[in-house]
Figure 1 (cartoon, rainbow, N blue to C red):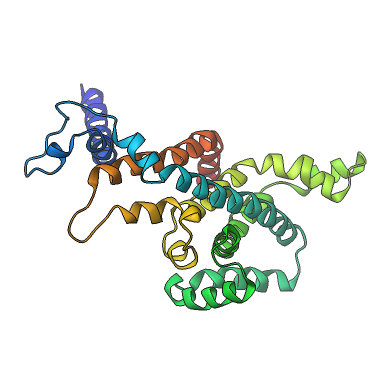
Figure 2 (figure 1 turned 90 degrees about the vertical axis):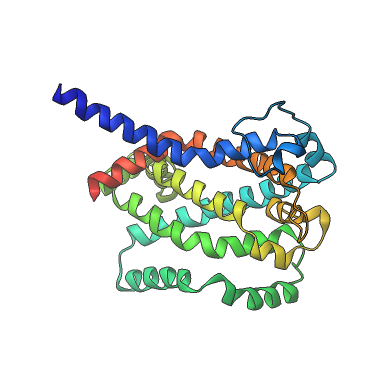
Length: 275
């Protein structure tokens, strides 16, 4: 009986936490399916009387959300791929070549994360204008890399340090080069770290708004946060379009999390053991 009471309270707590966490998602989805008369009411219902899907083709057509999703996907994927390549190589070097300057370099890398984004907007804008990159995807990808790579290096270095040197030595005795040992031995074993880095860098390029608003003026290059903001007006906000766009905007992130779920769970367990 005591066991049942203990487990019962635990399940009730899990249900309560899950409901609290998922209710905003549920509200966004059902609001995107409501007709306009049920959205703009003082007593909103928990379920639409007549679910309608017309908001989705409307925002994809008239709202240019389809093009914005492609732009966001290009920027986020580019940031993720380059961040993985750069951070994996840098983390390997900083983990395997231990010298006095290594600790200084790690501290300098971490210090780049201490500057608030608002302070850097104007200098970054001037830099991108002088480089002729304003209005291009590269202006966003390069800037997002500056913020995501330092943290990724620290994450990846921790995973590389957890891999014994003896495994690399064995691969080199079998004829592998240093880069070959890194590619065939270290990176596969550091897959959880790569998954964490991929998710963090993808989110960095996917959700950012301020820099995209500053660098991008061309309608065909706008990312989803900019298009989403265009539905919000001073006198009237198109909540149906906002909610439908939010659902479409969340799907790629959910897919990334599902694909990386296995490795993310492994990374969390590894961190718990080391902690």
